[in-house]
Image (tube, rainbow, N blue to C red; front, side, top):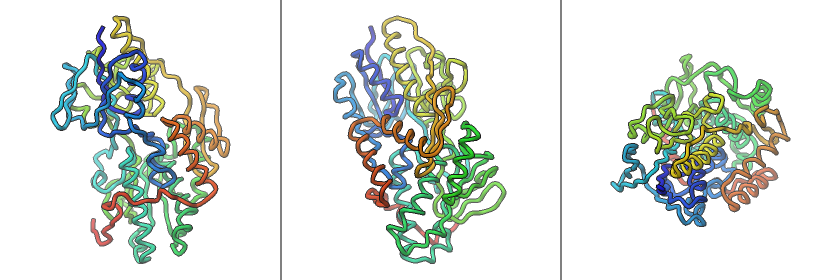
Length: 425
């Protein structure tokens, strides 16, 4: 019986797969560019200083201290060889196994928009969240120093994309501007701030019900968020964005929540790539023509038992990782694998204080307002990796709810904090 598995990626899918394999005593070599597992749905709260990094990130080695068969290696994967079932790291080290699991995650998809890769701020990893937080604080400190920067659009914040990430980020940023910043900057004219969401779609939260979309839109508009629906971003410059209708918004902060594509390293695997650069996997989550290679999470285009393509959600990644572990055990035991069956637990999005939307279960039981807000907090707290993270997040949320203090409002990326106000497009 073959018992060696290499797992590329320490996200939801990779960790769930490694845990499932470890329970059966399988030797697992888990590789990730970072030494931690991050809870991606809460990155926007790190960016807006509601949570600290330790609340949403946990060292991978800490997760697997009780799993003696799991070895964690930190390194940048440079290439993947699906025929040999090996991966080569940037420093030349090659690691192989009997089964290969590719759960390499995703990166921002700028759709070829000129200037977006250079000047926009994506929100997909801890480093992205810390960079964005430093940028926000750099803008606020600059305006507090000299209000002439207002004429250069300092308090215009543009968010590209009205999906869950865009909605949650815009709500958190609007709340930060309205309620928190006056506590830190009593002389700052925050009433002049504009949070602007741009999206090609005619509404927010595509995939949610009309009731949820309407509730989220009205709640955000009450907090001062402006929407530009039916409009895309044509160009991103250091000091402005040009929209598809040729109108311009002067700004020094563009947050990109406009979509994801597969990690670039996936191209080195030589597998045919489908939508978003992801691999169209077989029903049992294996790569076409490679029964010993599994592709999971945001690296894969996965269909459910009804043939529907599943969205890039943490729940899909987590369940696919656990399912792949079962199939790998079957594979190693000479038994047949089973097609992936997704259990839809619903979707939800935070909108602001006492405001959220939730559609629970396959029947999509709808909740809005404070009840959905409480459900969102409970679900996300329960999904955090460890006790330290759960307790830390709950404590931070409690403090944030009753006060305007943001103890994690720290600058850790000076290059994003320092802004060239004389830059030109």
